[in-house]
Each structure stands twice: as C-alpha cells, then as structure tokens.
Length: 320
Image 1: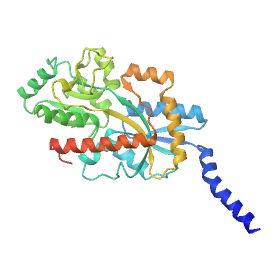
Image 2 (image 1 turned 60 degrees about the vertical axis):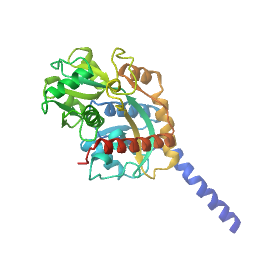
Image 3 (image 1 turned 135 degrees about the vertical axis):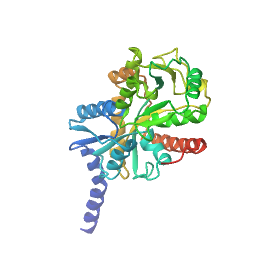
Image 4 (image 1 turned 180 degrees about the vertical axis):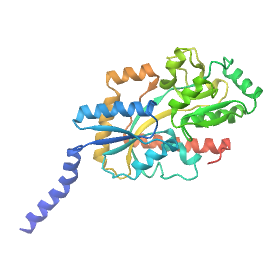
C-alpha cells in the first residue's frame, strides 16, 4: 500500500510540470510594448501577437506602456507573475543600456527577466532635415562645429538607441549636439521633418519611407555594414572608427518563468519570424533576424550590457 502511494506521488510530481507546460497557453497572453505606437518594437509586437494567436487559438493582445526609455513598461512586466502570460518587447535600451545611463533603475534587466527570443536587429540610419546642406558625415561634422550649441538631435527617449547613438557620435566627433528626448520615435521624427531638430539616429523601418519621398536626407548607416536598401550610403564608422550601434529588440518574460513555457514561446516566435511573409517584411524594412535559443539570447544580452557600459564610461557619459 505504501509503495503504491509513493509511486503515485512520484508520478504526480513528475507529471505536474509537464501537464502545466502542455496546457500553456490556456488564456489570454499580453505583450507589453514599452515604446510608442508606430515604432519597430510596437510593430513587431503586433506581428508576434498575431502569429501566436493564429498558432495557439488564444487571444494575444499588445498593450502600450510608454515612457522612461522603456523602463515603465519593462518594470510592469518585471513585477508580473512569472507564468508566461505577461511578456515585454524589450530593446537594447530597456534591457542592456539603461542601467549605465540612469541612476534610479526600477529593475535589473539581467536579473529580473528571463530572455525568451531574439526578434530582430533593425538597421539604422543617420538622417537629417533636408534644410541641412551637408551631404556626407565629414561635412555634417564640420557643420556642427561651425554652429556650436545650435544643432539638436531628437531621440525616442532617454536611454533609447537613438539617444545612445547621438552621445557616441558627440564623443567620437568631438561635437556638441543637444539631445532632445521625445516619448517615442514617431514624434521625434515628426519634429525632425518639421525642422524643430536637425538630425536623428533612427531605425531604418521608421525613416526609410521619408528618405524615399525626400522629407528626410540619409547620410550614413549606423551599423557595421552597408545596407542593401540604400547601397550607396557609407557607414558612420568609415568616418568615425568605433561607431557601431545595433538596434535590436527581443521578447522577455519575468524571471522565474517555467523553462518549458519559455522554450515553447521561443520555438513559436522563431517559427513566426522565419515565415515567408515576415521574412519578406524584414527585408523590405531593413531589418535582420537571427534565430537564438533563450540561452543564446541571454548571452547576447549580457554581452551588449557589458559592451555599452564600457562604451558609456569611456565616453564620459554620466548617468542622469
């Protein structure tokens, strides 16, 4: 009798987690987009939400919780139940760079989250208002130096890639552009087109349409290689060695989320991102996808945090 009891107990303990992971998901999933509507993180949050909903037959919603360079929405998810039903689309700022730029972080991006899936790296551009006469990066640097304190660059907020790129550019070019943070890339781009700011370091999907219509002028690529979308453009690094900015985004869950749930999400998100329609969209919008396991994505996140912490320190950028 005792043997039967312990045998059944052992089976129930073993089957419990398996049954739980097999049942996931059995209700609505929420993906928090901590950045403004219209940006690449928000756009691909919705791509993934639609894909998961179609695959699993469950409602998957996207909720925007913006502000603080992604900190507000990310903090909300860090404190949510670790069950796989509340996720966040983090980026290089919210999940690698912000601790080096901000004094009072509400969460630890390495300790308070479980990396789930790398989503994409969006190629970025240095774009200027058409009123800026510069046609090359060297000409633009000369333009800044000829107008000390008069040139401003917009960003999607403190700690975002567009902010970090501007600070790195200032350091390497020995320039003094003024940073103007916005609540998201969309309003920053609007003011750049309107001439309230002169320059922006932006993801290609958000500015390429304006470049093609002449509302903005592209001077260079901010990544480590030229882009097929605009093959004639050089990289900023060709003028400023050491300048390289990766605009990556990825899905994170609260720390402690069951490994089986994380693995299931990872497999499905990788499948969605490699589907023909999404791959075509990535290509046309100037973004790259590389499938990663949760472990590989976690290692990549840590390396990015270490890289930018050193870069920010070397550049003399002080946390605010």
